[in-house]
Image (cartoon, rainbow, N blue to C red; front, side, top):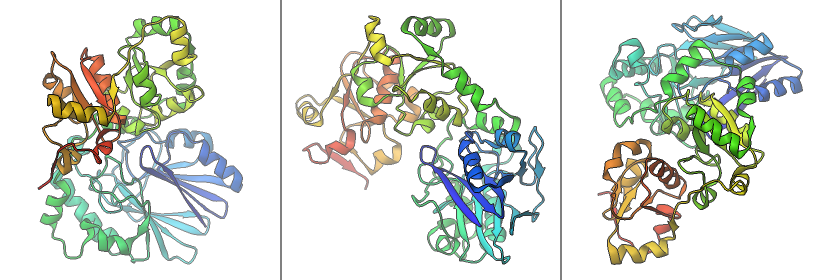
Length: 464
């Protein structure tokens, strides 16, 4: 028996490759299926099943493409109703795989079809659970994503989740390994641990939702407390996972169209495409195409794309580091943004050689800002998340979280310079690009952000 966790840090997502006696099951695959096919070829084994723990909201799964290329059966849990052929498992249904088995345990609460798959080893012993978004390490799946689709409240869904955990998960042996679909950084939960697998016994000790004797009403209150609004792209990804999507090879081929500067400008004007610059924040700050939006490929790329670009059908033109165009298109498609229509051939060097207009972001060091802070008492805006701001922030700085920056546009001064920062510099440049695209240019970025302010005389306010 072989179990391999294939973890994608950008999405904080874990897919799973399970092999026994030449038969393979893939659980919650990403959209690009090459890695699974290569592993199967290396093992000289055949993919038999593709198990989906639920209709994912935060990424587009590769189940359809993988099934088409391998003939493997797609398996969903009870109550799922996809628009394609799939096995809709019954609660307790057993799926043989070589010398091992996987049993579908219906665990509704995060969504109604949510299902945990229990793996029994060659001796029939409970060995591991693949818990999807039902159980994370340190947390459980948020119960507010499916409420509109099924006309239930988040409290009602949380109640179902409580019953699922109490009757299906907690009774399992402590030695059982928990393999969740997500880890720290995912928007599918609130308080996930950085580890990517653990024993159920340890989770019973450290996970608030599994603590012994927890009452249903207390569970519901704790699970629903402090939930932030989900990213706008989540419903679109659920729809794609449930109804189908374009083959990723087609998406990549269309997006990987090289365009010279004149062609790039012409298509941008014809299509009203969004120009997305994915280089480093330093490169973008120094020189970029006017009104382009920065979301760096080497940061939390896909989640920020999903949070900030509201329409998955938005046409996108790329400015990317040389050789990373296809990677960028692939990572966009992971979260359902399939309408990349080309990239700037030769990048910003070609743009400048063609004498096209450029823009820049003024950025200053913390040392320079420190002098301005005490002499001018400038307006400062902190674009970190609210919980980061509450924990500690620069005195008199206003919190305008990047996730909802457009809601704060009227707060930014129009007649004087103001300063923006985040934790390290990535998010503040994203914010600066959005503000400049809205015609707000009197901003100055504080390089290094809050992390660079620790050894200064700047004044801070701490959580009481």
